[in-house]
Length: 400
Image (cartoon, rainbow, N blue to C red; front, side):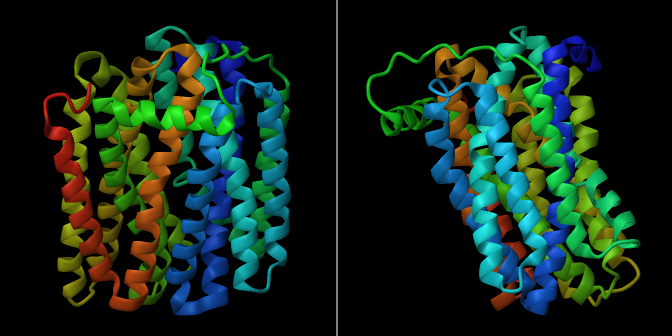
């Protein structure tokens, strides 16, 4: 899998992704702790709203960014978005009100919504060979797992020495390093898409292409499953660990790390598995694992917490992370097979937007249901949602 790093341009792009996501992982922990500091037991509602704002930015900005990708040099766009994200992260430690958190999250995530699909659409042009691209997808999945594994562990170490607010400084450093690495390489020029009209027309064409392709519609259903499991982890972990189990703040990072560890383990195994098995063979069972774990959580919550509760939570989060990786890692292969080079930026942006529309549903569902009706009810609602979505790709043409 590491052989793909012999490509100089991809190696630097991967390093840029790595440091930016490491910084983002620090921000995830810091944001959870900041929400708990500002709202206490209502932190799930604050986090659910903040993450819903993040998804609004992703859903609305990403298609427009994809449509503009053939008008603005990719390197210029990527560096500008990294600098914007760094500025927003540096401002977060100074907030004193919840609304200020929401405003800065909107700015930071709007920049991410422009950066990420542009980055994803660049990689297939850098690595035209499908085997190389498959390995790059697994490496990319590992990079995303740093947000849930290495970064929380680093955050736990830093919290013993520094106040939580300084974790946002680490986020800014990651974005600045990413900008420097992207600026150091020459990126392929995207082939212009032969579609009349402005940015909105091109954005709409990407969304139409995704919705018109059966296997991409099935992929969107699986994205909803991943969003259900991920929302449960990211929104409720801080309250589960601090309030329900009464454990210290450092254990929040350990729980998030278990989610990342499961995802990373599967990402390491997938390149060889995908050489021998169809994508659908791995993705659909993973969806039902997610639904099963979520539906079992209310049963565990009904039992009086005991010494088993902490390891059980870690095991559940490990399984959810593994299942999410089994769905997300092959997704790029399906997109690449479903569109020509000229359409890739718009298709990646459309899929990015539509997939995060799923998170826009699940984040507030997790946060507000947990705050109003309890964590067990939230887990049950998300489990039923995942079960229903996971059944859609079982049709013969649903996934390649």
